[in-house]
Length: 177
Image 1 (cartoon, rainbow, N blue to C red):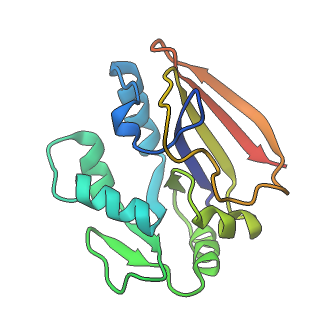
Image 2: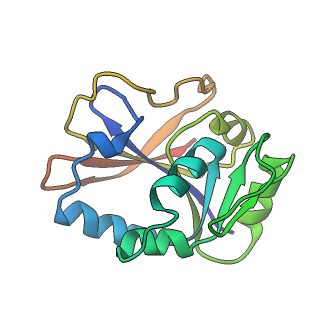
């Protein structure tokens, strides 16, 4: 059974929005990101993430990281989209059931970037197997916060791994208990 891993870039003050403005990716962080991406064979994402990624990376090539993302299947939860591009498929009206079916299929793990309203559904149905929080040594100031608008009242996490990078970032891995 595949796992669904949620990987999120977070500033020291808890901001997750617009990491392209504040995330610190040196050679080590970039290499580790690319290595990690090789552990997955599909993305799960909400509509907002899909639209942002498609706008930024959907027509870009020549970078190993974005080329790998472009080649991967993407499964999108949306109540408003009727069609997708960029190797993406809509999860349909029962997004949680569709994700559960994806997890039951053979293959590498599934990756989801960022926290969003979609997490309410995923957490309620116990579909996220691991949270990987990339804590960046910056203060972003304003923007959407980690788990903003997500009901985390029943979420209990256990730290299972930590990785320190030379740029001061720390990657913390948690599993729901």
